[in-house]
Length: 274
Image (tube, rainbow, N blue to C red):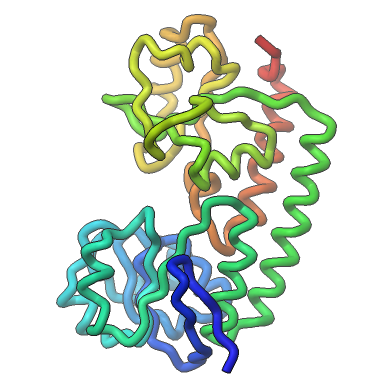
């Protein structure tokens, strides 16, 4: 029988009548967009898309603080998890208590191709998965065309304040930004989400500072305050964090969102080299 391997090498077989508990917001969205919403029996409180449809799905806590009793009460056959977003301790608790735990870990936009195949194959949504793959392939083609004709822009992409935090180049967020020609700082980091100290060279080196809408929800007030403090008064812009970090079915339109962001910045004259 054909099978599909998840991020930790476990092979999963086809199960079109699965009862799915999704503990990953972007995967919950993907399941609904693949036409699998009627099989989703549990979600986290952060699984908010598609907004109207997910209201009927029971919540079992957050991505980091899942209520095990609530989760098991939904009697899932499959639990979807992510290495970055969920705790390993929960994975260990679920093994042996739930028939199948599927672990995901996309680290680049291209990793979504395997993710689509995994979800489409296991849950019997091959046509939707194939359509998503075609859409992503086309979006990445548009991104390559953009990069061939535009300068790379060095950015500091901030996800938190007090302390300031950013993303390492080993993260999905950095890879997404890279496809649209945004080169994230720092050049290297020992952790995936490094802090940026007040005297860090990144403040001087960044051509643009991007403030994400998640996990910290930056505002226009934050834009104004930070812009006044930057050493070279570089542009500061808000950016939709979901478009940068949510993998799955959102990836094709997220690539196009970043392409459009590059075009809008160029029109506003903010891509001036250092």
